[in-house]
Image 1 (tube, rainbow, N blue to C red):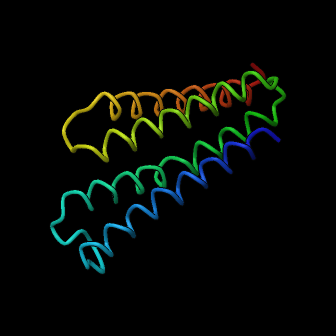
Image 2 (image 1 turned 120 degrees about the vertical axis):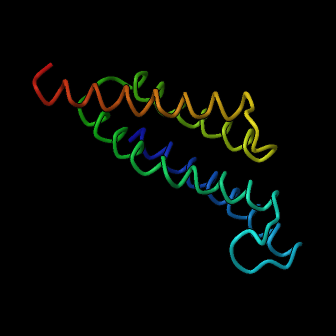
Length: 127
């Protein structure tokens, strides 16, 4: 099951992002929210953005995999999504301004989501 690989890698990325939030909270003695700390807010958003997109993309990827497209196609979508999320996390962790990482991450995530969605819709109609 190829999707399991990407689910596991997303899980590890989520843990890393979670630990970065916790580390900053401990350093700044902030129990909840961001306490006005910009770096903590950036880390929170990097973590939250993965949580907002990964579940749907992984469900779409799993359903796509079940249609029998071949390993290369599943890996192409999975790897693109993972790379996009890494770029986004790196970009937003450095700045709330527009960064290449955030742009690549956002566009990459949306393209994977759109591509998988369109393919699944087409396949549901026999295409």
